[in-house]
Image (cartoon, rainbow, N blue to C red):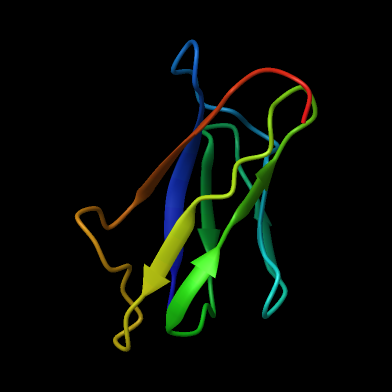
Length: 88
């Protein structure tokens, strides 16, 4: 499946470029573009924890579930991940 989304500054709502978005098993990672958007391809069906990190922000670990058809399960086809400024 494919997991798409955007990473935003939780305080300002601004898109964050250069954010590492990763799944550990299997190892898949992407970096957000200038618009804060990312795409993770080849994600197997099932529940996964995303590791979303950028220096100067607290690590986020949102959960995502990918269905057997490769689509994200839940209300949104695209994830919105807010990152909070701080150490982490």
